[in-house]
Image (cartoon, rainbow, N blue to C red; front, side, top):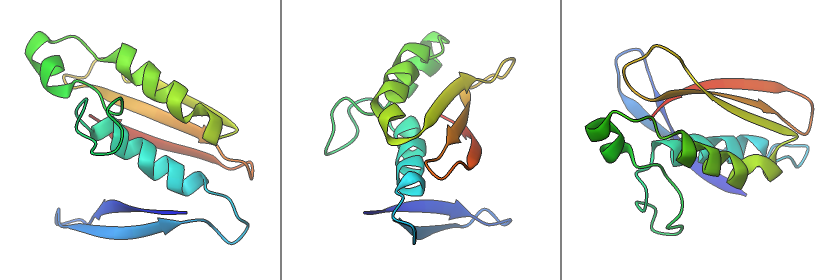
Length: 115
C-alpha cells in the first residue's frame, strides 16, 4: 500500500514524498499520512470519498470548531491503528488538532494538524 504526502523544508518549499508499507508489513505510516490529509480536506473535496474532510470554509465563517466532523474522521481511521486519539488544541484562533497514534508495532506517533 502506498500514498503520497507533502513535506515542507525550512524555506517553506513543499516536496511530495512516497509513504508505503514498511519492511515489517505495517501500513501505519500510510494511514497516518492519509489521516492528516483528510483533516486538511474540505468536506466533499475528495474525488474518491464524499464523506472525507471537514467543513473548513464554513468553520472560518461561523467561528465554530468542526469537532463533530473530526470525530467522524477519527471513527473512520480508528480501525487502522492500535489506538487513535484526536484532540483539539485549546486557545488557538484556527482549528488545530493533536493526533496521537499507537501503531501496531507499539510506537507512539504524535502530530499537530492545522485544518
